[in-house]
Amino acid sequence: MRSIHMVVQGDNAIDVRIFVSHAGPDTAWAEWVAWQLQVEGYAVELDAWHWRAGDDFVERMRDAVERSGVLMIALWSAQYFDARHATRDEWSAIRVAMLQGDPTEIALAEGSGPDLPARLAARDERRRALFRFDARLRMMSTVAQHDGRFRVYVKGAPEAVLARTSGADRDAVMAVVADLAQRGLRVLAVAVRDLPPGAGAPARREDAEAGLRLLGLAGLYDPPRPQVAGAVRRCHDAGLRVHIVTGDNGATAAAVAAEVGIGVGALDVLPSGGLSSPLPP
Image (cartoon, rainbow, N blue to C red; front, side, top):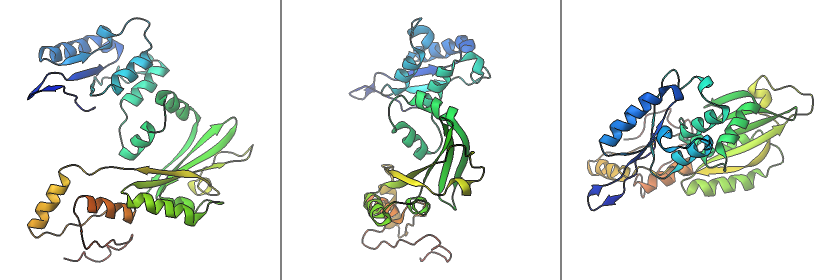
């Protein structure tokens, strides 16, 4: 769901706009839900009421979802997932409207540029293989087809990706990684590999994730929730020592810890595998 937007005067919220998403055969249900919400005083956007014949569905869907302060209610029924009731463009827009899953993946998708529905549809068309994230390897990869040739895309921990690349100045890249991590950013490296003409798509990830060319780095900031610092302070006041266990870069974890008051003045960062023995009291 999207965040609720309220226009406030004094202590009174005077507007909450809700977008109702549904399949055409469920229009009657959507109108009933919209009517109930309006009775309760909410502002509702419903295509059957507010969109005109001939409007560009993708544009209207994008506008409805991206408009500041939209709460989306999706009426999920068998009709909603029946592709016969939605054009290809509509399904692309619906996928964008309902991006869910790992926050990193969502942030990368939303921050990668304009025309997200079209790009997601093109990506799905070209994709021929997917090697999901492996916590041991600390990376994931996909294989896509471009003009009859295959290209491998890899993203993951910079150290892991760099170990499979050639031509990159490792020291220079890791210096940038360290700088970003010290600012509290989670850093990912992105690399590609173009297969020669006539080569088939790799069937094994060890064949795909080799001989890579580094494209660049992505730094993502996931701010701590506002209440975390207060909770940490109360733990300290009660005599409790707070530890962080994370798969992120140690410098990133240290920066976030300092931001919320963990380990201020005496912060120990243990490397991967450093928890084979009990934590100190």
